[in-house]
Length: 378
Image (cartoon, rainbow, N blue to C red; front, side, top):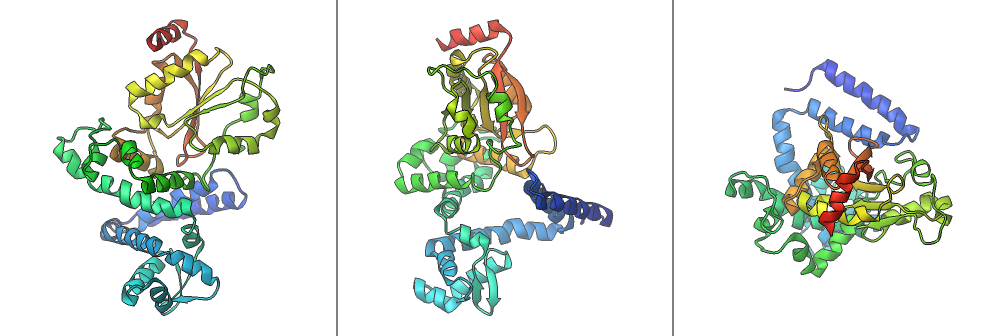
């Protein structure tokens, strides 16, 4: 059954309102529009259409996109510019079967990945053009070859373990899917090509989304620019686990006035890669370096709300289960984890339900808890 006309009309009105916000460049308006669009599809879609979409149409699209990526079909469409490229041209330049290429392009056009200009004639789209960029193109390779098998094997793995929540990163769904005894990162390290596409994928995931350093997300000047220490022995920001330094570059570009001031602030990310025991060990290394009432720990992570969790956050939770046998934490779980090492959550900053959060934490006022954490760390 589909939703009532009244429910659908309310969604359409909400879409119109969100559309006006987006046209005025309001923060998180695009994400709100996207969530409402998903809700509209859910309201209109029949059960048979739902099953066909998730079970056949989208897996077929993924396979066709992987084919197009392997054969560099999107690059060839992009090179054509405004002039349509024929299926015959694509097949001839790639040395492949014209019938196969035609079927792939037809499905990709039906799902708006490429544009159909006529019978067996196609043009690039903004989406297909982005898939010529290694950061997005390699995201297809990573999710198809690494994440995909782990997720598809997850039901069989859970049945095998008696439906226990995965918690062993050395014997989890990923190892079951890829028939290996290696941890995920060991498995990646043994495969240089996989390592390269993984790094490119991590870069691509950040493009176009709301950044922690965007104005309106976290009040940087108010929180980090207040009462700064001026001595040259101090530092403004320490980025721990920051990959290739993307966030530091964004910070430097967004807040140039703070670059001439020195202070002591700590930033931490990627705790979602670890279960609580390992996460505590990491956090306990940071606590001794912090000053009460001055230092801040900024944790860039997904935070699952108690109600109305977005599909993006819940998808990340299932990805972490499949790949590392860990989980994204709820707000309550973040409070408990940080509290156990002598830290307290000041505030969780989330621009919209579909975005990553920034958890602002500092040393707890209870010195006994902090002292106990120090002793454990020694």
